[in-house]
Length: 628
Image (tube, rainbow, N blue to C red; front, side, top):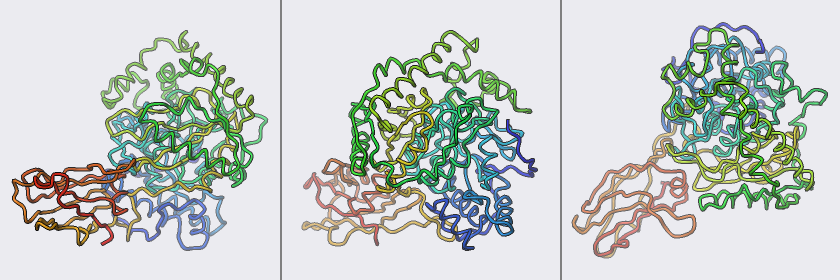
């Protein structure tokens, strides 16, 4: 592994452990870009210490409190001292570059000596690496502040981000849904503005899926463009590491800092004799003009639950055409046959973990088998990891057969790009919306990028039922900068980025308090004297609506119920919740709202409907008004 500077540390801080109080930062960091943060520091309006504290304030307010996003596992005990040293360096000699003093978050499979590296498993809670992962060392050299480490799907072996180390991470756009994975902690944290940019890893969609489901941009780089040295592996043949960001320029800045050759990662030998891509320099608002995009129709899906995401991606394609792109519907000949059996995760995990532990002095375990023996793996992961611990030999015939399929698959995809003179192939990153917590996530197309090693980027294209949808663009080997440029051109013309409703800006370092939701005057009584009154309020952080209501002018036996209704996306109305049951005349009820419910409330399109025996379809309809 790459050796970096030696650091000395006195204390390790778990997010869930109380820390000494610090003065809240007055810097508003929500949605600020790296460029905007640099402008604050260069102008003297803020220091790196103040910016770092502002992100820590947001983590304190929202990660284990309020909405309980549960995205962070570790906070660095030296983040503020790092920031202070970088402030002093800026004052004495100027900034090192665009990442100087910028707080960032790492997925908890990136090695650092000041915090454990657990890959999401309690079995590795005492695993301290002797040095930084290659990309972390690059970040430190560039002046980044390592703020902490994010939760991940345990051992990177899933796409919903649940682990024995950190539990279940929630999607900041809808607290009932998962944030994607396995880099879902990073995705949720960056979406919630817990740092400027974050790092994940992708073995089969683990950067792209969280990007899509958290309204971010994320690039799975060409295999070998970025080093995986010092990242706990899932399958080295498919593993890559890289950033997730709220905008494309931030992604480009982060990539410029961390890509490059590393003698400890043979895959990076692909860069020998080639100039490194320069991502920021490649950004171009006109990059889609004249671009030729192939629509991979087979990856849009035909199931009813896949229609909404596919429709959004098709609208995004239409927008790319308006921006000057040319499109053609394509297929990759024999794609299903070529891709089937080309994944190697099940064959490599056991052996790659052996290699990692053998190179990590003092590691608490030495193998996947020992991890399982501790009994500290989450029950959701145990069966899969037991299966991956079964192979008796490293280079089995089945494994070699899977490896042999990968090059023909890559060649077929690149031949399709060449035959049709394409700059990129496009399809939905995930064909369905984020799943409800506890349910499996369906609809991923991650294998195409993972099993070919070709660069793939996920770009936001809008929302379905209040949660984000992403579009994936794929190009040829080492055409990563061209992909990022096209994503930039699309982003600049569309701007689909939206602040999560559950993590708003802080006020004096604290989350906003509950707000009154009025019952709209003039609609609370009917001609027969039936009326509805009471108090309603919204906690904008937990996204819970409290209704304390009562009916007058009606006998309890005549009441059939009071329901909360919201618009249906295809027209008409639908019940969001039952607030008052039959035979009741008063109720105190809490509604845990989805992001779609919140959108309806904010738009004044949510109402209470009183049902009685005399008027079973609605005696009175009372609109909720959050503006009062």
